[in-house]
Length: 106
Image 1 (tube, rainbow, N blue to C red):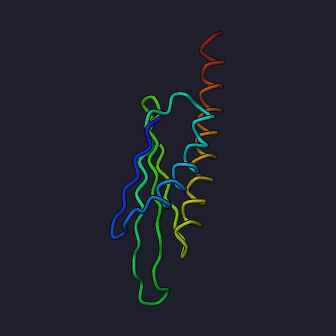
Image 2: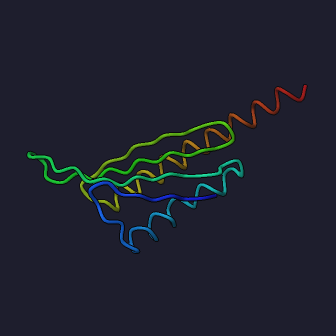
């Protein structure tokens, strides 16, 4: 599984990259069909709330794309939220694949 991490209006440091890779790599245990995960980290400056960090994830898995967005005032919290949501969606995808394979074998 290839993990691509990029930033918009945000410099990706080694610490951020390592942290994101550790969190996102957890989803690989659910499905071997995952070929690539693209993560885009951005920061938006809002007048009322201050800087908001966004983490967008796109998972490519054998003909399927799973897109998740998360945002938080803290970058690391946004990454955690993204990883948790991706994990849930990939688990859901895997369950659907199991059900589909069961139906197809009869």
